Image (cartoon, rainbow, N blue to C red; front, side):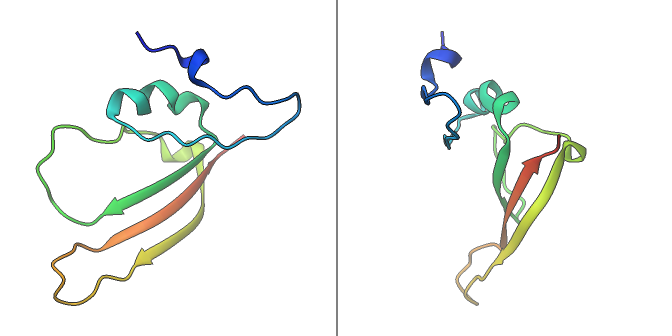
Length: 89
């Protein structure tokens, strides 16, 4: 069984730390309630997959920045967007 508390860094009192969560799906679900910032890459393509990033309520988040990824013409790569969200409240 995963131990959420045991896997977190132990900062000094009052310290602000960044910790990155890189899935799979169960890891995302486990840590998502603790996340205050979300860096999300959206791929504009219809692909078959069996695991997805967990659904979340955008009303709980503020979009801070969004950037279209420039895709070279003829590369066969789908368009993508990088977005940064901060949790409200």
